[in-house]
Image 1: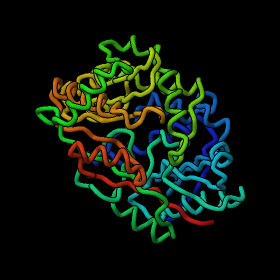
Image 2: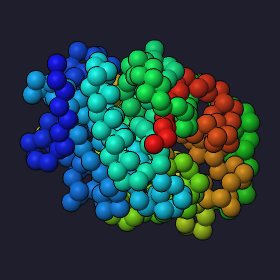
Image 3: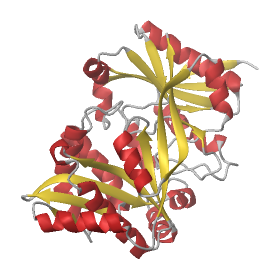
Image 4: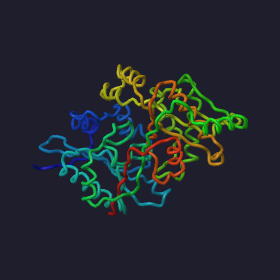
Amino acid sequence: MTITIREVKTKKELRTFIHLPAKLHKNEADWIPPVYMDDRVYFNPRKNKSFEYCETILLLAYKNNVAAGRIMGIINHKYNEISGENTARFTWLEGFNDTDVLSSLLNQIEDWARNHAMDKIIGPFGFSDKDPQGYLIEGFEHKPVIITNYNPPEVIDFLENKGYAKEVDLYAYKVDVPKEIPLFYSRIQERVKKNGEFSLLEFNQRRKLKKYIRPIFSLVNETFQEIYGFIPFEKKEMDDFASRYLPVIDPAFVKVVLRQGIPVAFVIGMPDISEGIKKSKGHVLPFGIFKIWKSQKKTDRLVLLLGAILKEYRGRGLDVLMGSRMIESAQKKGFSHIDSHLELEDNLKIRAEMERMGGIPYKKFRVFQKGL
């Protein structure tokens, strides 16, 4: 059967690209659809600022004129310049049930990268570390979480057979919510409070979060410089990112530490909305948002999305201050466990903190690389 690879050029082809995974995964109960409202922005060069500093290509694979797979290629010129690399990326690969389709798509992206004089290709990795990254290599028995890639175990063997090897691993920790705050946490929390230098800001309304959006993302820009794949947020990107998540953020799970009224640390968690996205089939409007809100109230899993502490204030107990209050909020809402989201393997301080809280690494993801 002949496989044809076509570059996405038209609006119709882009719709096919965006909606293809739903057709390929329609019989898989664990697959979480994308939020299509977000995808229409993500893949639109006029609305997604990342296209301004990235070379990109979208490809569809067809069998007998029926779409059977897809892939995106990215060359992030800004990151390559910052890091001194000469690397291309692949992401949004689909067609896992057909290795011929996968091979044809990857071959085309590799050739595209070579034609742009790239030395190496990594993936799955999007515009930056804010996008889903890595394929699951351990922990397939656990349900997927939003903002992570979904893949069968067979794709790992496929990539290795294609000459791909490890670039970097990431871990997701599962932390059981204790019935009581650990004593050492309580002591550190009290010490920080008595010191009087810092204050903890908590929220009960989404609208009160808005004034802290840019200060929070400015903190991310200052503290994530050494994080693998990180690209600093620009102001427009801060606003875009906030507009995507504010409607589904529970303000009770946003903690900000202030020093003299200025944010110096924060952490953001979100009740898992996977079931709501499934029931809404990825459509937030007009009525999907109600299914998402309802799923927030029923889930027993809290997902940590983002957090940072300014370098000069690390080791001062701010992580404990925010962490203990996050646990208390999780207790009040009846959560049984917290998913740490993805932690880089060499982020030993955060991993140690997760383990001190009783967390166990229950999923492992891998970003692959191949020399060109």
